[in-house]
Every structure is written in structure tokens, then in C-alpha cells.
Image 1 (cartoon, rainbow, N blue to C red):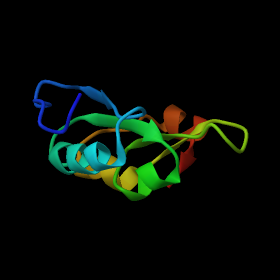
Image 2 (image 1 turned 180 degrees about the vertical axis):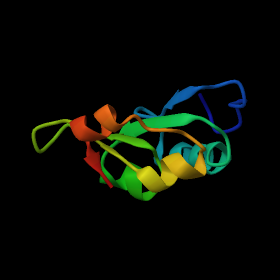
Image 3 (image 1 turned 120 degrees about the horizontal axis):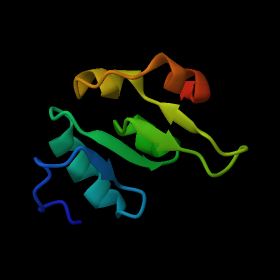
Image 4 (image 1 turned 30 degrees about the vertical axis):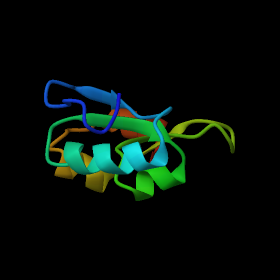
Length: 86
């Protein structure tokens, strides 16, 4: 999916394999929409991604609460206990 593709009908947007330029553009477009954005690494969280997967440091994931709130997403407390809160 390129940055110009429509995302308004998405519920989950997996940006794990997207180029850095597409990630930035798509996160900007998805930010005001109720879309769960998923990607990899700390840079993804810093850029405004919601669910940030970690392949290093034992795996797992982080939830960017600020980004989730901006997207008007409610994050279940059990999910927060499984991942690290950012």
C-alpha cells in the first residue's frame, strides 16, 4: 500500500514493510482517523504509530498511548499489561 492509497476504510494499518517515507505519510493521514497503526521498532512509536512491535530485546510490543488517544482508540487494560506502555 502506498501513501496515496485510500485508508479511510481501514481498521488496522500494518506498516511493517512500508518504506520510511510511506510510513511517515500514512501515519500523518491515519492520525485523526480511528485506525490501529502497527509497525516495527522504536522509530515507529516515535513517529506516532500505535502498536510498535519489537523483534529485538526479547520481542514483544509497545503501545503508544498518546497515538492511541489521538486516533480515538480504547486500549484494553489486559493488552497494556502484555505490552509496554510508551
